[in-house]
Image (tube, rainbow, N blue to C red; front, side):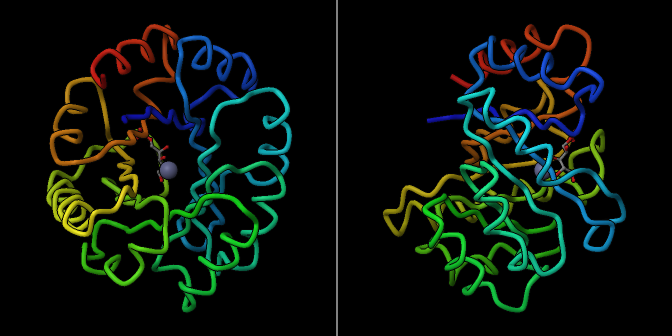
Length: 216
Ligand code: DX5
Ligand code: ZN
């Protein structure tokens, strides 16, 4: 099953609710919430208050992408504020297993994320323990960047690991995905597609529907 997860990082925060309703109305199942701390990545975005404000107004699956140092400090709070899945970066913590366990204990789904320079093999020891692997296809930190094609090779490697072990782990890609390259990501083995700047521009509902049509 494929899922589109539009990143609200590229939404218009003046009318965030309206933008979210546009994608929800188009039939989009997931929403991607990028949290940046200015340390793990050079930029700062938003955090718990935004998640808390959005949660009561939508049934969409809230896919939270933590780009923060020592995520184990905050994963429980993000779960409590309404995340359905909490993704954290392997590069951001010295205690990956502990962080997985903390998220698991909240009853929410667990995702692990790797940056472009981190090899596919880094997820190997954790594959049985998580619900999703997120492969960054740009350097995390900003929307609107160009996809790094080599990252899709890692997607193919991880999809093979998942299949070979008989797992049902979701595999997400994030960064630089547009209507003209989404097929490449799906072909590589991704089944969850993040798109920010390609969705939250002009006619948002039409953009979302165009993605959904390509993802069936
Ligand atoms: C980047 C974020 C992405 C970003 C994607 O650090 O994790 O989710 O919003 O934006 P686009 O689709 O514009 O590359
Ligand atoms: Zn993201």
